[in-house]
Length: 183
Image 1: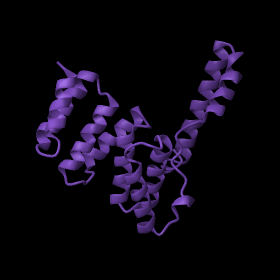
Image 2: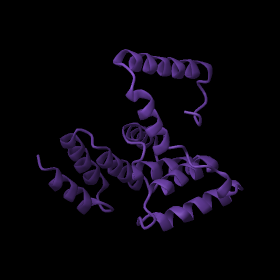
Image 3: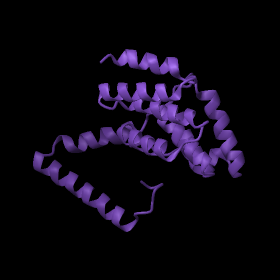
Image 4: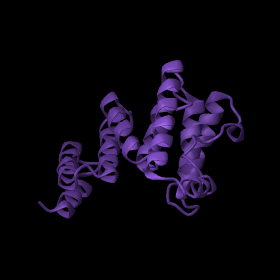
């Protein structure tokens, strides 16, 4: 029942025994209630076990991770890699640019990320600066404005506003179900 021990086993097995690494990460996941960072380690191990290919099971896991934590760096990287492998170079650049904006400038993956963005842009014949990063949600100013707006509302007024927003999103989804980029 020691998460640390399972993570140590996974690290020791990384690169040499993918079955043991993945099993250890599954145990650590179970013990943490599905911690997104540990799940992302497992998705990375799954890709490493298939010589870098992001397989359908790994893609499903990555999608689940990004729902739980849209800023999880390993999951974002692997999501971009999956898009690259699908030859959707613009999507790969967008996803990796998002990771770039969320990362500290001295993050250890920044050099590799810049190389991957440049490679995807070259492969797709696109200017990487013309491709916007996948939006990561509202900025701090938007959040502060919303907090000021709702501060004087009653509970019923806030509930009505939330209901209106959810209904608007449901209508948008019904009108544009294929707008993956928009969502």
